Length: 434
Image 1 (cartoon, rainbow, N blue to C red):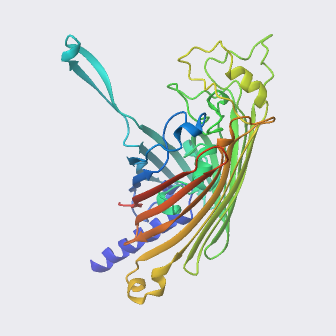
Image 2 (image 1 turned 90 degrees about the vertical axis):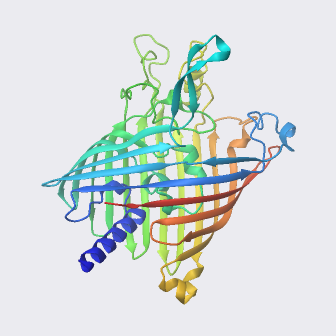
Image 3 (image 1 turned 30 degrees about the vertical axis):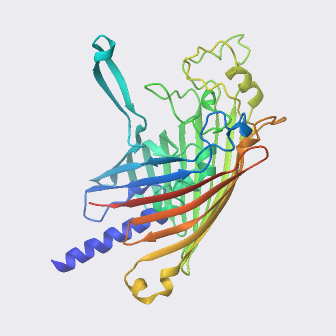
């Protein structure tokens, strides 16, 4: 019995490590002999931000230079994985995510308003079904997945669990310009062969009417409706090469048109002025992870393009949109970019008793540059989207699957905008429980 318990523990630890390092889809992991898999991850974040949070801090930066600091406590993500092995190569994967503790509403009897019944919004947040798919395994090198799936473009989307980055919050650059976590409905072919893991997919296209200046295409994978418009389709692909023990190099990209992918599709039709606008989105990304010699180093570079950006801006700014329309009227840039690099060293690796106890303490630094708005012409007053960010801190792993994080972060803004420093503390977990 003791041997069985030890074997189960080792297997669970191995699967957790695999999920953290080697898979873009943690839910695909099933313990041998177990038909049901249950797991997940979660984060708690406590921050003190030493800059103004006023909505006009970028339009009138001088007016908010001396504003007081403010605190934010948050639960960015709490995720439940559930998978089931039906046998004969058929498996089910699901992921339910509660962002910022989910949403809440209630009905109340308002005594100070003539005892009227009112619906009240109690708190913000989101509850999302990020994955729901059926996978057919033909062999290790050939799998077909159909359903709602992760689009693994960029390092952050492919390896988004909290043990896969050092900072308390997800890396800002990719989290700003790309959907995060990017998930959509479609069909995926994937597999592993030798040192390579690969995936290609066709999914519902992005919606250009949800793009904006501050987030580029970040909101474009979502839908304000009860369904996802799929007048346009997109294709995505990813290739990971495990070149040597501890070293992974990845390439990924996305291509698809984004115009005419909303509801109602009233921009397209005989004689309509925007009939030929395509809004082609192209994103390319390269990333690398090194986990060896007590070092963890991660880096990525992403570059994106939106065709017909000027015409899309004209459409989005049209006065025909109602004030409560889901269309985001803010302009979008033709291009966006994100580059990031972080490195951490396990100082406990040099202390024998702690090393033997399998505790780890990584001291790390991170640098990233990103810009969510690179227009074809003059940026005018929108240079606040051009950000250099530095972060320094520690990650303490007391046991497998748990990390306590702390970092100091500084967003360095271009003149005349004010820099944005903050102190952050977080705790996160990740693993399979069944």
